[in-house]
Length: 305
Image (cartoon, rainbow, N blue to C red):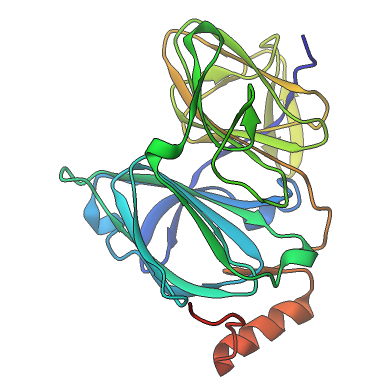
C-alpha cells in the first residue's frame, strides 16, 4: 500500500456569468494560480433552464492554453477560424490545444427536457509550446475506455493511464491523468497518482471522504488555511478537493450513497503566468502583443486547412 495524500483545501463552485450570459459555477480560476499549476480554471455548467445557457459562448480567441470540454448531458455545437465544425454530445470530450491562437465559438444545446451539463477545464501550455500549431482531439464517448476497480468502482480514462489502460487523448505536455470515477455506497478505493504532480478531485454527485483516517477537514478563512480535526472530511457535490503534494495514492471512501468525481492530475510547469481573459502567456508583454494582434487582425498564425 502506498502513501495516501492528505487534503490541502476544499473549493466550492461560485455562480458566475460567462460568454453571452451563460450561468455556471466557477470551481477554481484566476485567483487560485499557481495553486493548481498546471491547471488554470474549472467551470461546471449545469442547468435545466435553456435561458441560462442557449446564448452560449460566441466567437472569442484563445492562445497559450488547452481547453478540455467533457459533457454529461445535452450537446455543444462548435466551430472555429480553422474551418472545424462539430458537435460534442453526452459522454464525449474535446481537448483543444489553442497554441498560437484560434478563434472559436461554443453553443450549448440541452436535452429535450432542457437539461444541459458539462465541465470545462483549462490547462496551461509550457512556454515552449505557447505558439505551437492549434489542434483538436475530439473523442466520442464510445472511444473512452472504462476500467473496473476494487469494490465495484469504475473509472472512464480520458487521458493518462490507469491499470495499464491508456486514455485516447495523447501528446499532452503536462502528462495529465483525467478520470471520471464512480464509487458505490459503503465502499473504499485507492487510486494511484504520480508523486510531484498536482492532484485535485471534483465531485459531481454524492459525498465522499478523501482523508485516509477521516480526521481532518481543510478550509480557508481570510486567506489562511485551517484544519478542523473535530469534524469529518465528508465532501459534497460541486466541491473541488486539492491535495497536498506528498503521496502516491488517493484514499476515497463512501457512506450510504454512490459517489461520482472527476480526478485531474498534471505535472506543474513552475512558469510565470500572465493571464488576460481567454489568453494566457508568460509575460505581460506577450499578453499585450496577443491582444494587439487580435485587434489588428494578425492574431492567427496558422492557415485554415
